[in-house]
Image 1: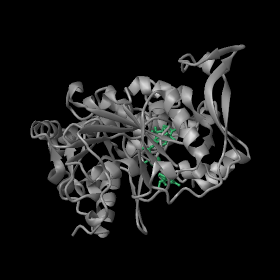
Image 2 (image 1 turned 120 degrees about the horizontal axis):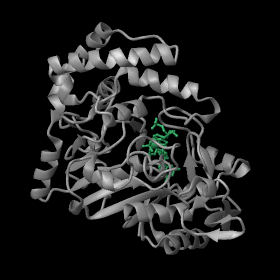
Image 3 (image 1 turned 180 degrees about the vertical axis):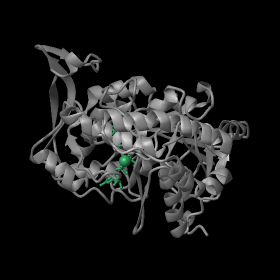
Length: 436
Ligand code: GDP
Ligand code: IMO
Ligand code: MG
């Protein structure tokens, strides 16, 4: 059934490796996970839901995965959705059907009994809350992520295991609906939702969910004992982390490395490498501070050349120069051990390339990412300037073959961030990579 597993395999040594976004998401985690997944036995998603959009390009085929871990592309790999994730059944079912339609086998997929379900009222509330915020809106993906995690933290959520027990499901749904309908109608003026309609719809998911539900913590732990290679695929990015990101303009889960342990149910001593994925510039979808944003022809150039439109919502991404202050912060939060730089090809053709090496705040230079909003909001970028290059680098596979100016740029990032840049991506395709 699996036609894609014969494609050239490029990944290197792999033990337990976390791949995560070092910026505000959309760094190319899908492509990077796919790159490593060729050598992995398991690929685990540990947080987020279908707010994620991870793109993998194989020849003429483009896959946009939002819930199924990117390792699904390889027959040898077991994809696992951990307890830290939130699941929209309709999206998951459609994604599985789309993959099957493209001859990708999904029968090994496993879903944690403890993952939480994104219910119809979560999606309605995400819309209503966003709309009520006016110019203070977060710019969420409106997929119900925040309200679902909110219920989880308030201990009202409905988990996969609750759904599988009809009695539990009906009781929890009834209790939730009593409260949610009041909020929807009385606070936001929306339309209430009906118990029977949800029950009818959710009957369609029972067979699928019961076939994939498992104690995924145990599955992962047993695989570790057998020295299996495990890849942990982060969603969103460090600056969208609920604790360490640009709160409140963040997502509702911990996107940083620590959650690879909690969100999959294994301890923190099990990880060998943390690969931070960062674009050679930076982008953000949604509202919130963005110190190096280029709302000018440079930003337009990045958006057009980098095709910077959201995978999930189709929104135009905001773009700007690479921010090394935030990259250093990302190193600290995640203990990054390697960097995978993506989209270097997008910078070809720019006369000058800038990179932010500090912030200026009230005439002082700041080099550590400021946590206090009142400082962050007043920071101006301090740039180091580099000469650009004109060559098309999208076919280059050897570091030495890169233009000298591109190498200077890469080496500057490496020295400043103090994280080895082991891989550079120069195009969306699976094999457009430079391994150093
Ligand atoms: P993710 O959410 O981190 O997986 O990233 P997305 O898939 O949302 O966005 C990254 C986009 O950049 C996708 O369209 C990828 O196909 C594309 N991409 C990834 N790496 C490269 C690269 O090195 N060069 C170019 N031009 N595109 C890339
Ligand atoms: P991947 O995994 C980029 C952003 C939204 C919004 C904020 C909160 O593809 O990198 P949410 O719907 O999560 O409550 O929205 O987070 N956001 C992302 N931005 N990439 C993503 O995922 C994102 N997932 C959420 O735009 O600003
Ligand atoms: Mg994305």
